[in-house]
Length: 83
Image 1: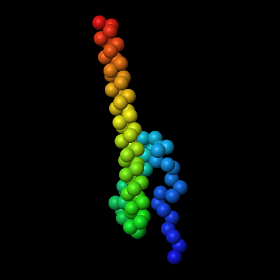
Image 2: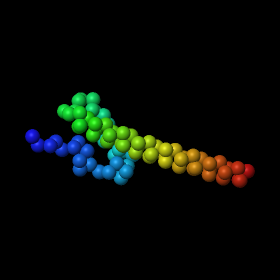
Image 3: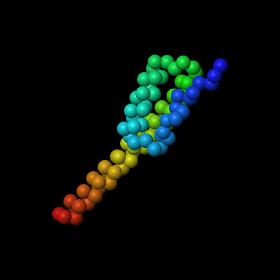
Image 4: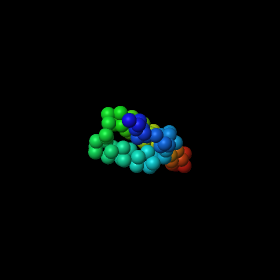
């Protein structure tokens, strides 16, 4: 029996993905998990990839929120100093 190829083999490193890329791949991983993977090992690999993708998406969202908060703070400071 030949070893199965890991479901995440050949995929890009999660840390290199944009928010949109990570989100889209996460959607695909969830859909595949919902359909039922052929083996437990395959399911576990998909689950681990999904967890990593979800964490990457959260990193992007936290970073975006931080940037928005900084921009709002700068705008508020500019308004206060102009008054």
